[in-house]
Each structure stands twice: as C-alpha cells, then as structure tokens.
Length: 241
Image (tube, rainbow, N blue to C red; front, side, top):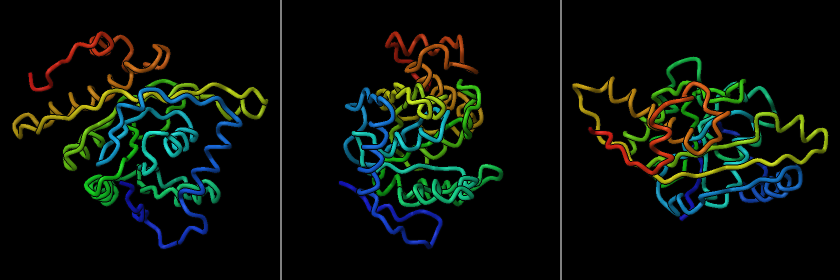
C-alpha cells in the first residue's frame, strides 16, 4: 500500500504531484542512460524498509526514486542541496527528509523512524556523504540506529556506474548504470553492555553487504574485508555470535 509522503521539512506545496514526476524522470533516465535494476524481488512489496545504498552521484537519489520495486520510496538527503533550486524542488516533490549532516540532526532521524513505522521505504546512504572517489567510504552508525529504532529490515542496495554519469551524458555516451538489491536482513537488538561494539559491527555488516554486491573497484575502505567474501559465498554469519 502506498503511503502519503508529506514529511519533508518545508511548508511549500509542490505544483506537480509525485507520481507524475516519477514518470517524467523514468522516461528521461531511460533516454539518457541504460539503467538496470537487479534483485527487485528482494525488496518487500510493502511495509517499512531501509534501502541502504552507496552514494557517488546526485543521480543515485533519482534512481531510487524510479526503482520498479517500491514507488513510495523516499530518502534522507543533505540539506545543502536546498541551495540548488531545481534539484531542491525535485527532492521536495519526491517527499524527502532534509538532513543536516554538519550537526547531530535528531529531528531528521526521528522523522525517518516515523515514516518507516508508517510503512514507507526509505533510502539512506550509511557513508553519510557522497563519495568523491567513486569508492566506498567508512560507514557511520546512523543507518543501524534508525533500523533498530524503527524495527524494520535493511535491504543492501548497490549502485554502480554513476560516479561519472553526467560527463558521459553530456557527451552523448548513454552510460550503463545499475542498481542491485540484496536480500533483506534484520539487526538483532542491542545489548546495553556492548552497545558501542555492536553498533560498529552492525555498521560494518551493512557496508560489507553493500560491497558484496559491487565490483571490487568500488570497495574502497572495505577492500579485502573477509566478511565481503563470506557474504558473496552465501555464508550466514550470526551477528550475535
């Protein structure tokens, strides 16, 4: 069931509805690039879920916006993009949640938990910012914290090919880009006596599950991590062990 996405931190009313904007961007992105979506069967058809994704380009948010698995998806987006009028309008129309990345934005985290409990799909980049190198950065604990507070599964989401997508579009190359969804998983409750240790492990697990869906050239901070190989080989590591 599609939920109403009226949770942006703004009083402005979009002049175009979300569904129409999705259709427009679906046509544009397919015309300018060759997008592929893999593992869509792993995304729950309804109910709150976090799409934990790597982040290399502004195109990433738009790809989540037009994904074929969930049309109700929204995202946490850095509020610095509010200074770009067109992009900010697109994001507001999409119903995103603005996030102040320079400070501890507890209001945005509460809003994220709220929409998840209402059954909305939420895209979050655990790295906390866009990677300028095209490789994974070290993950931050915010995604794990939101997942635990909302009590929802996490779907690792790997985006490839967007690191240089706009220069290639401008030279009419129509680049191939892909979004791959992995199997959903749920983080076990925290043990108060081991909270810090567990949050570090949970964040590492999220990032390794994303890395396992990406070519090695994207692994960055997590390159060579043994957990990536375990996931790729289908070994289920008990997080409580």
